[in-house]
Length: 390
Length: 136
Image 1 (cartoon, each protein chain N blue to C red):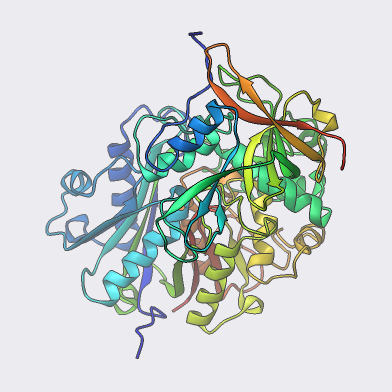
Image 2 (image 1 turned 180 degrees about the horizontal axis):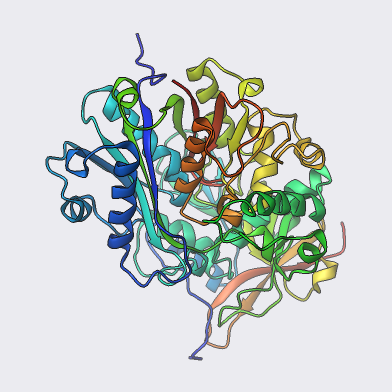
């Protein structure tokens, strides 16, 4: 009998730091702040944390964090690879640890000086010989050095095949900026975006322009995972994990899966979709809102297809119908997302998924929200999660 | 050696041979000696038959543009912008990432035929790039 993670764990606390362009503090400081904030949110003493999960890209080691927040015995710790692809993967690790008794209060965190320190957009260099660096070697000499260039190659092909226009990408950017106008934490708070502004913005990597790119942010975000039983005794309404998975598929590369026969779909996201729907016993029609990973606008339209909200090539039609807006079929990234709230590598999208389940989002739809879908990084080994009510 | 040269590919067991072929003016494709499958980017083992025996064949250098992007920002030292990056479907059936040269940004499009030429930097580094060719 296979062990399922359905209803085995819940998110009991979320914590964020202020999101800025120059924090003036160390990444360890940001990590400690957001982890304690997640514990406070849940009503858990940070000394009771016994599991920690983060990203391989995160500079804060688990024990550095544990000493900073005064945690005691740790019985589970791990880090997940592949940038934003790790986001939901950290929750999968935490849920497995909780379900199997390896730990009872697991905190997933990501803290980064993503603007004032190491910027993701700075891309790759050739310092260390590893299998991953040999992979990047095929792009360095040609000047294909950063995420915008890699995603643009897929986006251009996808848009060409299905007649997706720059206006369609603009609709995604504007929808998420409109959500951010209600969210005081967001970069986009107080900064409305019009289609005219969008279309006039400089193109950076054809067909992607400035507003198709996510933010670069200094900040941290932490998620506390525990058992459903324990979560029900804590301060907040639990967001129960109905299904969660990691996903990588044949021919997978990190950002540059250019050698598969078809480039106009996201096979790893389709795998994630099939697995979370099967684990949860749910389908696309059961999903009321989403926090789809959005380092770039094009990724949102493609994921609408990966997760079966529409057929191949129909993502643009959903966007044109206003599906992503607060009163639409699938309100998406109601905090503004990575594009208009902050870029904390997708962990802040998980926090928003929890707020939607609690009914506490600044962009809370008027309809009932029973289930929220959250995804990890696009174009990398990824993952997805469905959150539900206790 | 100019101060601003393009980033050189880090070389290891699994890729150095390809760049050595490029330095000799040839576009290489790795071929499995077990099942004859061509593969790119190169890897130490064949994903089809798990053979670790391989050799390299020389590509005709002809192909068509599968996808492209035109990079304008940020401008890294050692590269010329706007920088046109293409995915090329080679006649032999493999796909590779490269640069399109001698072409204006408004001329590039999907499915255009291209051919390989060797570009040499002022510092002597050589790499295969592509230019548009007339259809067969």
